[in-house]
Structure formats: structure tokens, C-alpha cells
Image (tube, rainbow, N blue to C red; front, side):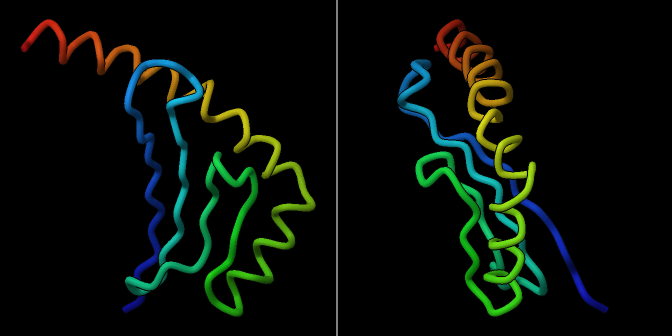
Length: 89
């Protein structure tokens, strides 16, 4: 069988928005094919198929939606995680 999966990640050093990076990585059979990074601001392909899809996604509404995920998804959850970690330490 074949395996396709997506990993969404928020990396941060503080709860400030400029210290947060949002990434969304797509894999097929353990091979990274495409990734969106808020630091780059667009999709980047790593395989022939990934490059074609990155071009398509960067010219569509998907890239605009992903650019908002840093603030909409990460910023909210990082605040919760930082608060939870500080109360436990």
C-alpha cells in the first residue's frame, strides 16, 4: 500500500508572533514532496510532482489561507501551551 500524510507544526521560542514559524509538510511513502513555511511564505516542492503542485498552490487561494495559519492556528495554541508549561514548571 501507499501512505500519504500531512504534518502541521508550530515552532516557537516565545509567545510573540514574530518568533513563531508555521509549517505544513506533505509526505508520500516517507518522502517529503511539498512544504509550506510561514518564513518563506509559499509552498516549495521537493520532487517533480511536488514542484508542479507547489506552483499550482502558490497561484491559488491555498497559499493565502496558509499565510493566515501562523496567526490563526499557532498564535492561539502557543499561548495556551506556554501558559500550561509555565504553571507546571
